[in-house]
Image 1: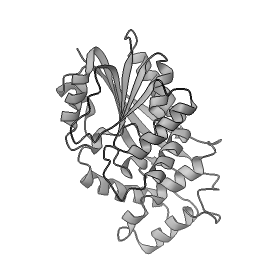
Image 2: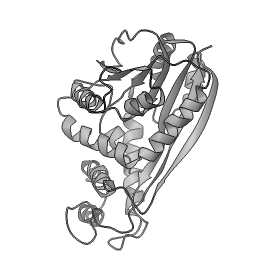
Image 3: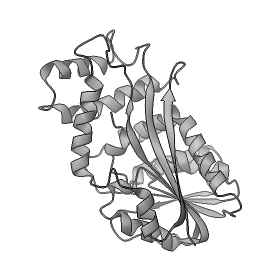
Image 4: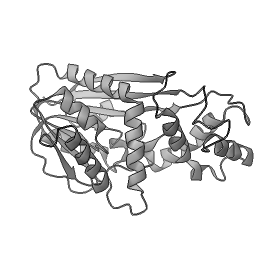
Length: 289
């Protein structure tokens, strides 16, 4: 099932019905459970930037800032400009940066990227993860990014390749294949709402003027021993799509979904020994000539 990226449209700051406290918790769970992926991804971007002096970089659509923190570690002399549409998420990032001794290097900017773009000044590197597909005009966003990157600078775009999976096909309750049916509903719903979800980001980047575009897929395969937060992450991820399944899944499937996302009971994801986290994300990098 798809996870927090589609529960929170990260470039907006005017969504009164969004519980940003809950979203912040989920984003932090994502960072904790998928830390190995994030470390590998930012490490690869660091390698792609070999020879480039990175004095200033942007994390675009930063959420609670796990990537901003990782990037600050990769480039310990660089200023990090973290941009997001939610004041609440940016506040959590600032608190995190202060705890880690990064308050003097990690600075936040609140901006709706479907509106006028903020004046961030020139930068050497831009990282953006699970953000571009939410925008009304990703091509224009990439042109805005291009204009802010110094010649020779690097853009890194991370996007979904496949939904995260948590459970085996036969979970010992209900009809086998529940998670696949949930994903099919989720994918159909979000394909209609997010027309750029499956875009060719390499082509978009080339059209915006970036050169030397490179693509790499990162497989996510987290198995036992799982991080301590894995059960809560799976529960929250599965629960957040619950309202979309009414009328789309039958009563038996809905009852099974409720059973596996409950706080107790033998089938809850909080205590399943067969819980895993599998999926994939893809990164593209490109340079401004």
